[in-house]
Structures are given as structure tokens and as C-alpha cells.
Length: 283
Length: 283
Picture 1 (cartoon, helix red, strand yellow):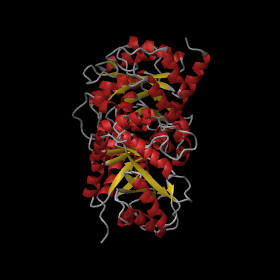
Picture 2: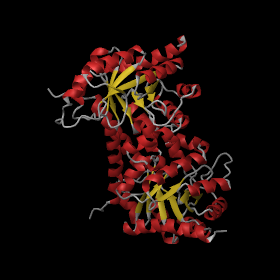
Picture 3: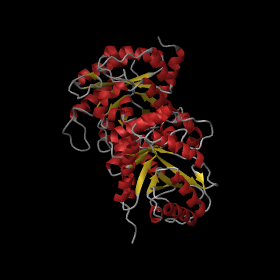
Picture 4: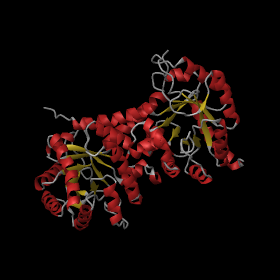
């Protein structure tokens, strides 16, 4: 049951996404990682034109040094222990500084493929919907789970982005589909259950391509996704400035950028402190 | 009352500071701002040689977008609303990823010059001392307040760094001293009440100096501080790569670096997203 006011809330949210894609000539970027969790950096990237940001719980585990995790791989092992309240607080902080015209999608425990029971209550949805979030960033592995999540999210005025992965992916971050035909079929089903944006996991299982190119299998899969659905499409993982054009050429609308920002931000901090630590006075 | 085990805890902490100063040939840097609050960046700077980091509550207000603050000046107005528990959690996260051989000093509500009553309880000290902190980063404005804070901090095994300011400073971040003679007198008193590191606020009230130099008044004041006390000395505020040598030349031991890191980190994030947003394919 979607009430009309929640429909309006979601329409307003998704219109930000459509406008960003249009202004980018068919594509835009979604900024995640450190720029999604730290309000200072969220503001910095929004100030130069980013329209979509994504705070998520594995990145928050890294930001908070939760249980000492220092890699995304390790963060995936403890992400379910991050509390929905913490994600709501982080999201509210980002919303406070970026203003209302930015689309914020939020990853929370219970919204990914879980290894322990994580039951999302109505109170959790109310909390996330009231903290300034436009959408839920999800990684469910079955259509059944996704449909239930979409229904609930819509009831509370939250759009949903969800993903398709390969059965061989190291981490399960979406509904499996092997061939381009299966991708098209799954994407169609995801759209039919009301998913507001549909993405492809593009960072795992695609080894051995030349610089600037993307794997032929991945290209076929992305094209199958893009051709099948009317909702905005996303690509998440493995995107860098070298292969960016190859991704854009598939027609995918939203390029999710995380690690390549984090790496440059960390390098910038290191460069500054090294300038001081290695300071040699002029003779 | 300092018990022997708490004395040992503090001795171990301060030995990290002395070693860092020695290895730097008389000076080292203390990294604060975004590198103190975000465990990812704390790890990044520690990985290249930083030994002293400082999470503090105004920086956390900025990191969390608390009440929408986006400048340090605004953060100073709301910093007292950040909870000690939040600072303990942030500090624990930093400690988790930097390991034990890094000196962490923490700014908390009640430890600065306050505009509303902020009573630090024994439980607050226990929380901070147990979260991995070596010291309290303080900005009290009277010797009386500082002495009380030092006594309590030492009881719970926390070292204390405290500061001297000018009566004309925009924000009150230390005990006032106008002339070099007054600086020497105040510094001596601060050392006598047990302050473990004594700093000078160097970023306010010193306008109109040439690039690469520091204000003659500030130079006199820093020299007065350095010559008077045996404990490690700090300079906080307004330090950049251009005037770094002039600061080092005063003999001050610890250069507090915050804004110059934050600016470069924000610029790095902006540069990366601009590379994607302005991407033009090769013809």
C-alpha cells in the first residue's frame, strides 16, 4: 500500500536522478565511500556538481574503525553489526549539509544479503525515511526478498535501488543471472516488482581485460540490462577513469564511484603530512 | 591521587611523544581534523609516519554534519552538544586501526572553555581512558580550571595538553597571556600543576606577516614558552608549508596540522569527481 503522499515523496526523489542523468547527457555518477559517510566530503563533492550520494554500512564500519576493519572485504564481515540508528544519524548529517536537491540512497543492515537474521522493522523504515534519505541501497539475492523490501520501502516513501550479479561473484551483492538473456529476464522481473533503479555488479568476476576496456561478457550483460528496463540503470564496482568511457558507451545511466575517490583522498592526506614530516629547510 | 599503574600508563603515552620529537630532530606533527575523526584517514597518515593524532568534538560535529555546521567557526557554537560517548567511540575506532604505538589525544565537551555547564563525571574520564586515548586535548581559560582537570585526568591515567592564548583571540582557547613575560609566567604555572604538554594558540590575532614568516610577537611568545618549560610544547593554528620552518625555528616541538590537510583532502575528492563529471571521450 503506497499512499499518495509517499508516492509524491518518491516522485520528487527520482526526479533528481532523472535530471542528473539528463544534464550529464545520459549518464551521471553516484558518489559513495568516504564521500557518503563524512559530511565534510559529501559537501565538498556536492559543491562541484555531484547529485547522488550513498552512505552505506560497510563504509561506515571503515570510517568508524569498527572492530578494527581496514579493508572493504573485512568490513563486509561485520557490516551487519552497524545499527540502523547509526546509518540514520550519518544520513541526517549528510542531508543537513548537502541541502534538499541531492538524491541520497542509504545502505543499511537487513538491506543486503545477510548471514544472520536482520529483521527490518517498521520503526527502522520510519527512521531511515525521516533522516533525509530518498532511497534504500539494497543487495538482496532473490526476487522474493527484493519484492518484500520494495513493498515496505514504498510504504514509507523510500525508492529502492537493487542489483544483478554473477553466480561466481566473491560476495553475493545481487540476484544472480549468468547469460545476457537471464540478465534481461531478471531485470524485467525486478522492474515489475517496483524496483526504482536497477544496477549491475561490475567489479567482481571480470578479470583479464585491456586498460580502457571492459570485459566482453560484462558489456553484453550491461547492454542487456540497459535495453530491457525503463528505470535508471547503475554500474557498481571496478570503474576508473581509464574504463569510464567503455562503461558510458553501454548506455548505463549511473556510474557508482567509491574506491577511486577513497584512494585519492587517502593519498592527498598522506602527501600533506609527508610534506611536513620530510620538510627540509632551504639552504 | 595518581596510582602507580596510572602513572605507568601516562609514562608510556608520553614516551611516544618524546620519541617522535627525537626522531624528527626536535619536532614532529600532530594530525587532527578529518585525519583524527575518520579511521580510514587516521590509518592512512599513520601508515606514512604520523605518530600523534587528535580526534576532537568540533571536528566530529563537522564530520557528522551536526545541526548542519560546515565551518569550524560554526562547529565551535555546537561542539558542546557532542556526547562524550561519541568521542569515545570515534577514538576507539581510531585506536583499533592505528595500533598501540600512536599517541592519541582527544577533545571532549567539558575540556574546552564552555558557554554552558558541562560537568565531566568520573564515568566520562573512565570512558575516555578506556577507549584507547592517551591524553585529553584541553582548552581551559584559567589555571584553576586546568589544575582541577589535570588532577582528575591523571587519576584516570590520561595526560593533558593545554594552551596559552592572547586576550584578543576571537575564540577563547587557552589561558590568556599578553607579553612574553606573562607567557613564561603562565607556562611555568601550567607546568607546575602537572600539564603534560603546553601549547600556544598561533592561528588567531596575528595578521599582516610576509609569506614564510611568523609575526614577531608570536615568535617572541613561542620562544618564551619553549625556553620556560621542560614538557613538550605545541603550536596550534595557522601553520602551513610556507611558514613551517619559521615555526620549527622557534624550537617548538609539536606542530598541530589540521586545516591544511582537510583542504587538500576535500580538493582531492573534488578533483576525482570532476574528472568523471567533466569526462570528454578521446576523439
